[in-house]
Length: 147
Image (spheres, one colour):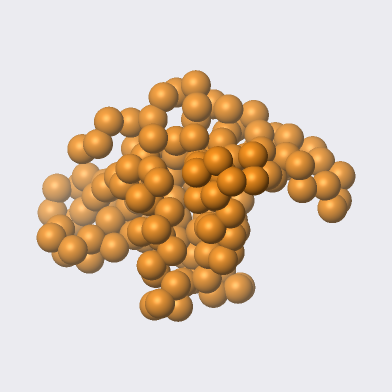
């Protein structure tokens, strides 16, 4: 398994989650900071669905359409898999995989071809989401565009 993200980076997401929830309607400053912090993660983690040799990320059915669930840490992905009843039926383990950044952005974006419309962060714990069309903005932040 890929090494987990630093606890400090993940804890900052929790702080920013509180700021988003406390922000006045229409103020996106905290949301932008939350997603910028998400791009600072070394890996994005996913709950694996399908076969072990070709896993695909778990997605939720949202009103807007299917959203891939990305997790800020392996620990949070494991916690979500247990809460959502997505443990492996044979060994009871949470099937997880990690994708390094910024490759993870392109990986998630590729699912737009299959009808996925967005990505949800740390579902069901945080649950903030963005449309796949905004992933280019996140990638631009990593590459230093729009800083």
